[in-house]
Amino acid sequence: IGKRTPPPSAQEEIYDKVVDLTEYAKRQRWWNRLFGKNSGPVAEKYSVATQIAIGGVSGWCAGYLFQKVGKVAATAVGGGLLLLQIANNSGYIQVDWKRVEKDVNKAKKQLKKGTDQAVPELNTFMEKSTEFVKKNIGVTGGFVGGFLLGLAS
Image (cartoon, rainbow, N blue to C red; front, side, top):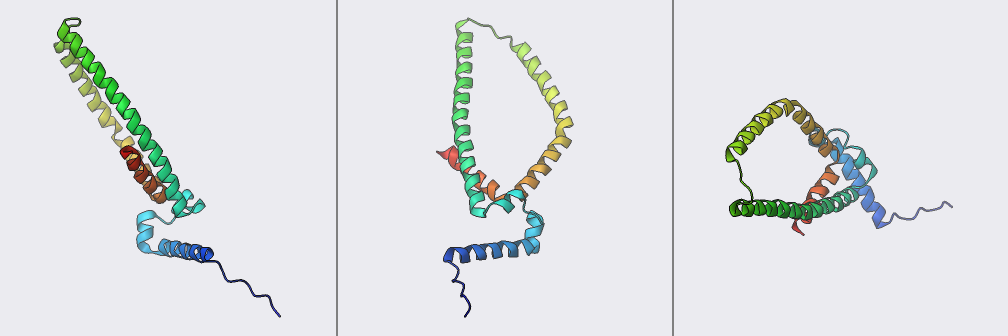
């Protein structure tokens, strides 16, 4: 008579339910308002679990490196300032504090000018960043979590 198709495995059933849930969420108005109609290229290529795993691993690596490099940089800057202070107190160097104050005020004025000019570019960068986060919410969430874990380890 006819061939019977075997019942789907548990893994296939779970996958079908996740896909159905994803499609259902994309059709909801709140989802479209929050994330847009297209969840982005990464969301279309990989499952949510894979996106979170990729983001988490890369975030942990970035956080761990940030922590290590930050410690080295803080040690170098702190050590340099300590050596300068010891040299100043020992009489090896003389600091012209009036000139330092003049240069700092000049730098403040230049920074203020540069900040006023950079505002439109900053707004564009923020808009692009927000759009990226919306399109790649799984990877971004995993990255943030992994970054925090990397900083803590």
